[in-house]
Image 1 (cartoon, helix red, strand yellow):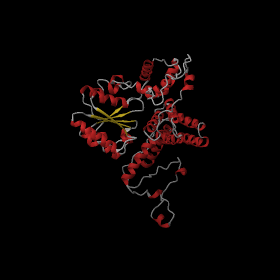
Image 2 (cartoon, helix red, strand yellow):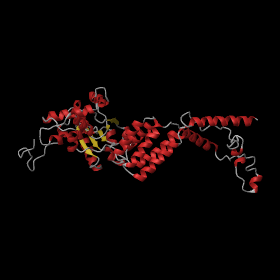
Image 3 (tube, one colour):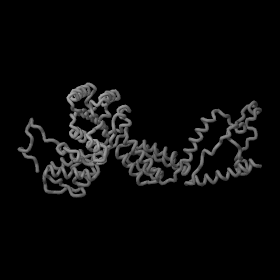
Image 4 (cartoon, one colour):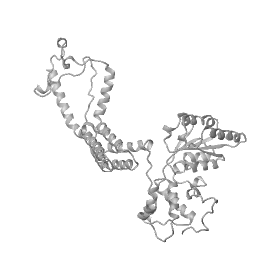
Length: 438
């Protein structure tokens, strides 16, 4: 139904509160999707039951209830609620909060200081919390969408408990839609598939879901039900959550890497698509594929690195979106290739040996002798040119003289091409043993 002149707010009147604010829970039991924190046997549930609220950092994606939980914790703890935003506040604002909290403490009332986007405070500003958290002047509840390990001082982390909030699942989001319909008395004009699509579009963000629901409820009442195409016409798909400079960036590239390592091309393609849809630079992915080919496949399939380099080259020539297919092809190739870290391990072992042995000289027989003096010193003496030997293999010793603790740094697996290399090395080892024993 279209709003009439009588239902529209008059100039100067306070506009109607957003649906997400009107649906904000008034009791902890109404919070959805965070039972792992709020259940009676969960961390916050135990704190509430014991009336012993300690300082904490609420870490989770947007729209999952961080601010709501902080407000409700203040209510159940009979604490004054002091909200500040790290985006708009500075040390001067915090001093006022601390002074007020100290005054309240003098009359027996505690203070819950809620700091939204706490990761935006710099190190010095974060340090200003420490004495007031330490002596109990305030109970600090910080909210952040960024990994606290990277963004918060170690001293602050040692005085708080980090609690991880989950993105809202389909059941939790469906509950929010039901509550919205009950509150407003209007059923969303969606068929079942469109309703599921709306929940998927929210991507775990309850506030975003309710904002979309409010847009739908404001549509003129035509008596028709929207399908997924109709929903897409009225509601813009939001970009997936993905911060190329923060933890999401590293989480997804780790997921891609480990899916390829685990030989799962389907999962690898999924994570590749997630990264590209989130705006990741395809050339960053291409560089990581080259690294993966060397690190996780190595000599089990020497063509893997060529495939990765070819994908990089194709993308640089074609760009997006055509060049992304070459990257996808390389991802499938690498995921389905045999795996070996024998070269990786061998190189690390050789590094350790090189650092341990210092500056040992190569044996004289493998050194070139461009001068008479060097020939007189025995450089190149008795060197055998392997291609001219009967087996194409001389069996000479190429380690430094005096290096007794030798080991086989490269130990090929039986995966892929390395199985052939392994046979070849055993053949050469037998030849070497026979010639040295003779």
